[in-house]
Image (cartoon, rainbow, N blue to C red):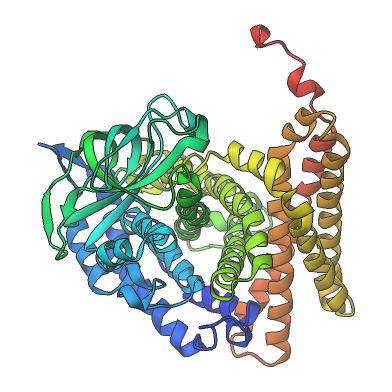
Length: 592
């Protein structure tokens, strides 16, 4: 059975050596001393490794069952959920006012990776609740916050997001769900939603659904969509649960992966709902949840890559197969371990360099969220908004690829369910689809985010890269291995942006045909910047006589690998972008 060990030391390295969190001026960061964050991460690591990871295969094999309208989760899930709830983990970075611990988002993200890597399907139950609580926190009335948030922060009640309908996915303006106003200020919600993660289950007393629907007589299309709070059980004035609402689970979807999470068809039959935010401004309120979810899904790509890599590494060290072409390495055995072979090393280094670079990227993004929310920093908010489709799209695409590489290390055994590695591949695959398919993320990046505020935020990113290179160009140990490759990759990114500026207006297809390549080009540059920063931090630690010299030298070696073997992909993506849309659009639809 696969195992998982939380990468606590690597997380600490990023928080303290790279981000230098205690030196930042973000409120709450001064409290994130190394001993404090270590204690939290160690405890989270113990819980995820010992409790959640062993349930991952169980959840995959058993899945969820629907019995008389009630969804039963896999064996062990409920007890584990109680343990997670009792530990206060769901409210780690939510406001103390509602029972949370009030820590920065960066700590919630660090712990979140451990949970997702150990058991992605399980973690979605409280992960979605976090997003729903954030939406109510941002857009709810004081009464709504007081009514729902304390129980949601504690995860006594869980939450969902209901967008998709059978006939419309990304194009939400086509939705048919309706919300009819009532005299008491509530609404009657009717319609059907599909693909609702954690839509019904047996681990919480109540489920608070956030549902998109149209109020009759409102504007056409997406401008007429509103967001509503629709509880499974109505909540009385004293906070106790009342009668069952008109919402039910009609079916559990049979899926490729994440079997332990109940993906439901939800039926709303004149269910009582309460407007969240303003009429016809539902997408604005829902995007609070969706943007958080997209960053969280990007983290899922990283998390599955990490756990798959850990198990592939163990297998490569133990599995005897063939002899090293340069000389026998295991003379007492019939063969050498897989890890002696260069192509296995290539595969493992691809995985390792991605996971460590992605972890830094994810935590840097989380620190921008903290700066935006805790300091009302509009520049940070704009930059993380720009980065959100890159975090979601690039990390999930690459994360899935890394799970496939891990599976390949196992050879035929990787294709057999008994080894357990195929679950990582299947679970990772959904992250490329939900919360906005990655093609949509690329279109959002190129079609909307680049031009936001006159291109101010992408220029800020370029300045960030240029400043780092300029400030460190005198560091000869860093220059050739890290700064020069980063400079070349950044120039590719700028050239791609220039192509869009010169061609996008007169031929929009030219820009859109290159959007997916641009998202990946951008992602590689982001990881290149992270590796350059980690390279600097590792060199600084070595110069200061750090105790664990091996850790920092390993970090440098891994970084050099990424800069030399992975980052040059930017040139390929640029070449594809520069080719325009002619060959993409030339073929008539009938001739495909």
